[in-house]
Amino acid sequence: DAMVIQNPRYQVTQFGKPVTLSCSQTLNHNVMYWYQQKSSQAPKLLFHYYDKDFNNEADTPDNFQSRRPNTSFCFLDIRSPGLGDAAMYLCATSRERDETQYFGPGTRLLVL
Amino acid sequence: KNEVEQSPQNLTAQEGEFITINCSYSVGISALHWLQQHPGGGIVSLFMLSSGKKKHGRLIATINIQEKHSSLHITASHPRDSAVYICAVSANTGNQFYFGTGTSLTVIP
Picture 1 (tube, each protein chain N blue to C red):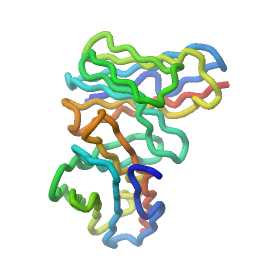
Picture 2 (picture 1 turned 135 degrees about the vertical axis):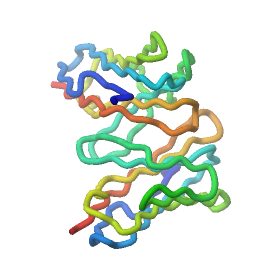
Picture 3 (picture 1 turned 30 degrees about the horizontal axis):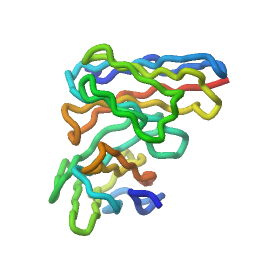
Picture 4 (picture 1 turned 120 degrees about the vertical axis):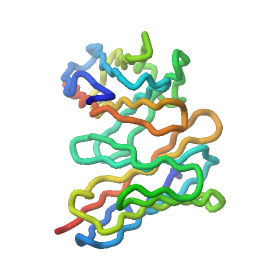
């Protein structure tokens, strides 16, 4: 059974056109993470929520925003995608900080 | 300088070989994670360690907190073990996560 679900799996957007990526979880975990992974690079943490407490990494561009309307869902909003934002975006959850993270399959974003 | 360094970057092994991937880190940590990523993007968490050693099937992970070093071992390697293995740490200050750049493992039949 899928535990961390990401939609869509592939997303194509135009330069500058806002896009929203979705993540949902059936684990009832407190913590949800968004990572960006570019080709041949390690994942880079963008931000995470501990319950409703939002934690932004210092070098995450302002272009990236996130919403967590409830425990199960978390959204990544890219306000004005640039060509450099084309990447795989991974969502993960953990019951508490510093516990095992469970990853979704990722959404591959292409910016034209 | 990266907070997390992995070695080797690339590794090719014959099926059945014993494999070791190393991870060194420079920050104080509350936990270290070993992740496996197959082609196509799926990431699976293999281990989370804060001390000692853990074993799961053919995989063994060790950590030495004093030396700030961890190793991931694969015994009796198999072609299905071919993947990128990523070491990541949770820093014990500031809710920071740091990732290594990964080790790409190819196991040849």
